[in-house]
Image (cartoon, one colour):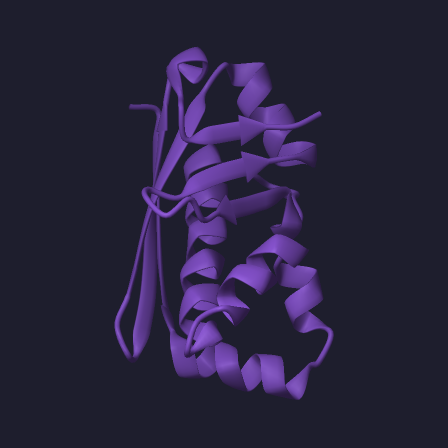
Length: 130
């Protein structure tokens, strides 16, 4: 193991922030992430879990400068996948590392854990884009 990141968020806090700042969702989440969440009864649960995953990945990769949309959580119907682009992808590619995430949420909180390991080539749950 090379890195580990974890993040926890109260879903109500994200809901309030998104209500106060209409453009915030576009800054934090990709179009696909927003569409995925919109297909569920309480989209903010899924957005909060994805927000936590982005934070956990940034912590695990020890990213200093990055954009939230450079770390994308891709719903697969099974274990979520991580799509990295920009500086996040550069950091993973330069180090030859892979990232896995696990998400969870309740009615009140969302959380995610990111695990960074040394075998990018064997990582089926990560997509690194140019």
